[in-house]
Length: 327
Image (cartoon, rainbow, N blue to C red):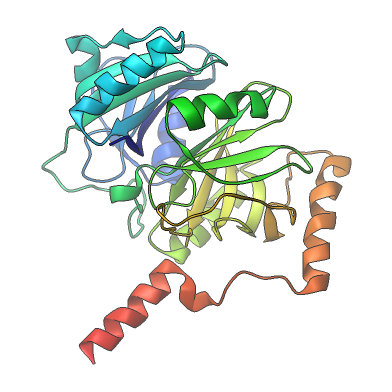
């Protein structure tokens, strides 16, 4: 029992034309005509994974987290109310807009809206990407991951860990506090950045092929200020990715090859080597801010610290395993 996936995300934005082109043309989501001023997007066989509200705000509107069973929603509602958090049962109109069978919603201590659901609706028609690519890695791993800027990351850890049951994957304290959490085999589906400010930092979508990321990178470089972080590889989840600037000012990480862990045996730990083996130069920061991260990458290069052999990447390992079975 418990939360098992990041099922969907919603953002507030009045820049719907820009988001239509960004989510469809760059990310390759499928826009679905729902009517009204909001935008709805598919990534797989779910009816809806991403929503742009059409409302002012230019930031996170809600995170939709899936429970394993209907009873999980009752269990979390009781746990949250015992901890002093107001919980609201979603009415039929809201459930219909989210395409779920059951839902409760509430705010975390920092004011971020969280929706817990069960029974996400599926679409009978095949997913049609907004640009050619080999598909998104979703399924049991959910939409991807979501990362929040927060004033005090450590103060929010007990809410997500102890009340919502997220499991800590790892954490780092320099150059800024970072806490990563998993709810399934994806290395992390959620993270907190102790940046000293509040807001949406980014969400991540993972593609099935490295070339999908590379072609997206080419598309992003053709846009004015299209790239926020250059192509690089993370130290904790081994994701090869770049970050694109969205119309609303936060980022979307476009990734491939993310680490799959065993949630049963995984042990949380502190990391001190920095967020990236190479790349991920933060183009949006002033030179002084970029230098801190660059120094950490240069130190890793000098030590020869790298990710595990490429055969441990999920895609290639799967291809090798298929080849052995066929042989």
